[in-house]
Amino acid sequence: MIDQILNLMPELGKAFWETFQMVGISLSLALLLGVPIGLLLFITDKGLFCENKVFNRAGGILVNIIRSIPFVILLVILLPVTQMIVKTTIGPLAASVSLSVAAIVFYARLVDASLREVDKGVIEAATAMGASVPQIITQVLLVEALPGLIRGFTVTAISLIGYSAMAGIVGGGGVGDLAIRYGYYRYQMDVMVVTVAVLIVLVQIVQTIGDYAAKRADKA
Amino acid sequence: MIKFEDVSITFNTEKATVHAVRNVSFEVNKGEIFGIVGTSGAGKSTLLRTVNLLEKPNGGKVNVDGVDITLLDKQSLREARQKIGMIFQHYNLIHTKTVYKNVAFPMRISGKSAKEISKKVPELLEEVGLSDKAHVYPGQLSGGQKQRVGIARALANDSHLLLCDEPTSALDLESTKSILELIRTINKKYGITVLLISHEMDVIKSICSRVAVMSEGEVVDLNDVYSIFSNPRHEITKQLVRHSLNVEIPDGILGDTEGKIVKVLYRGSSALNPILSNAIRKYPVDMNILHGRIEYIDNQPMGVLLVNINGENNDVLNIIHYLKENTASAEIIYD
Image 1 (cartoon, rainbow over the protein chains, first blue to last red):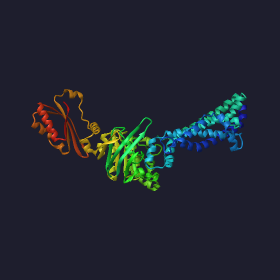
Image 2: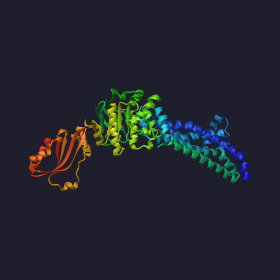
Image 3: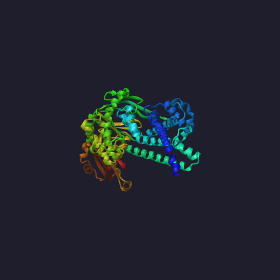
Image 4: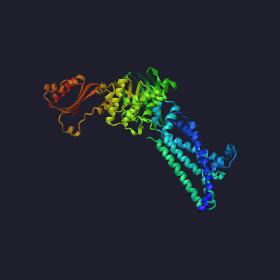
């Protein structure tokens, strides 16, 4: 058994790198696009400074539609888009496209939710001081919501580690894929146990870092 | 300083149209502390919010320093707001910024230089007595301290007007006293006009010079605070004053007394004359003081006495008549 696990090491190393790539790319895009989308959903809502019913409804429905599609199916639906963007449908880079789409809408909803938690009175106070909308967004809203934004980001990262296991379908690879291929298809229980253990450790580390960062940001 | 002209605000809810403020007109003078009092839902908070246009009136004008604030464009409105400080019942401080940064925030918004900020903020913190808390987060402060930060923040851009939205309603008695004291101090020191709303007559009594009483969206009474207390005209005003000047006697004692109980109100100089002793010398009745207090409002004395009068019916009526003529008022409250 030790031999088998040692033999697995190069594979595991490669799988780790693939997971890192997929989660890294999609998380970065979630941060880059999920925050503005979540912010737009929030500020166009009723009673807020950029109230826009049509945009808010349409955006909300679109986000919900994408979120309700099971990830495996999203992966397949987006194959043409993937082909267009990365010129291939195989490999971790290809899998990152659909992972990113899922991550962006997932995080956008969590961003929207944590902005809703911000004390409306604080926004009112900033308005009363004569702050402009961009000033309120950058210096009040995002700052006050930071602990929630970090917690949401942690949840997104962990979900993505889970989603990335399905990337094996398009040859994306990754730790989860390794567990399925060796452990499930080839009945190598020990390999499965080791890879799952690695995933558990990975998730624990991400959660611990996330909790620590959120706690540091939370001054309430 | 502030001139409300026929201001009306309605809210459309799904069920009905709510008239929060109805045709309100009055003026607040420069440098005074003006109070608006009323029960919750009277529209006072809505009215206060029109002054910096957090609430947009459906009709009427709100002139602040001669400018109709409802007509300003976005940029001018922001500039006008920077000169109007506001404090809130729940303080509304930015939780994730230190006390120092909270106070610096309005200055940063209005584009003050780092040098100006680092000079002004410590001065303001000194003024409100929180110099040692500069680098603490609001979560670690008591309610009274949070409101002090709110006041420092409201003064940061040298406001000429301070709007206070129930500033002491979430505070205990001791903090309430010290916050009101602080508001009075900055009013005197900087000549800043204060418009304050409260549902408590005691708050109004202790710092305001004039007061408007609101009920169901309308101003039903407006006068200097002494007159409002000594001579309440509207039913709502009477109710509010009664809560504040609480000189009631327990039912048990009421049942045991014989004769009439009369509430005598003294105002100004009449509070200092020996009216009661003159009265009993004139009429052969027994008189017993059950309860009494003297309040100083705006440095003028105002006294309330509850006296039990016993004797021949005619004499009793005569003495009550005599009291009525020589005091602010005398009414039979128990027969």
